[in-house]
Image (cartoon, rainbow, N blue to C red):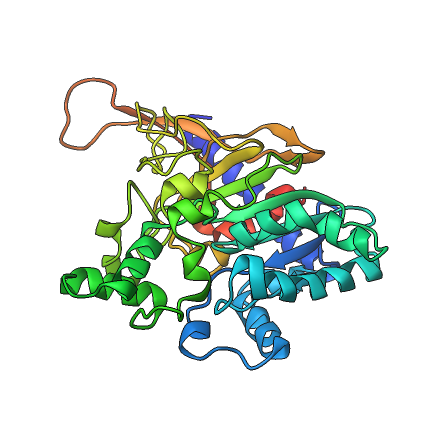
Length: 362
């Protein structure tokens, strides 16, 4: 894994895998032989201009995934961000769950792909969908696993600040106000923040937290969003919207720097302020220090991914990303052997969604 020859071979193998994955996507919309259901994240436009009806919600949901996953999915669960998870969002989701069940799309198991707040919505649906559907005489959806990009299931400090600002804006300085308004898209007001209420760290971490048999595969970003103005107000490392403690699936909302106690988001093998524990069946698979909150969905290249949980099978889904370790010494350091790093070779040549899709599809 450490020689130049091996690195080139790994990159060539990855390129072949990516190409074959793209051809497979044209033939069928399946991932590892299973139908895919998409659950999008927070859409700030819904707060400024609430969608008129479910069709408007669905149109926005299709646009959300257009960069990569839309053509590789079989169904979506779209929801309006002006609602609450246990209210309007649940009602909208149930209409779509019913249709998926009636069509039998998950008879051979489905894989859910979520992004951002979609992680929290997915968690709530996984806890309740069987009961809801069985009450109407319908078959529950059989879910193999959930792939969660920049998962906000643990909430974000930006939501805490938004709610505080909505109810008491007298003392907040302009950098904090700018960060909150970049996140919400509006000047926060009581009653107009919709799902942001549920994204408060305490609220999110008390919603549908019962252990579940369905593995949640976590893909974590660490880039900068909104020009970096939100980062000072989020605990630990983050992707400009979601803190690492949430994206990793950590059991507490304390600020952490990595999903691992021994590997940084950039892949350096060294002691890290990692999570004290992870939620049951939550597995940090890849970290990527450079990719942004939205860039994980297929729009950004040039960023190296770092494997955390790898070479394993989760509920029948094989997780086997290529990896290599190497030693690197800074140009100015004339002593010692340098620092050790680990990476997915060639991952900077593609975007994170293509990497994940192609790897899990082989």
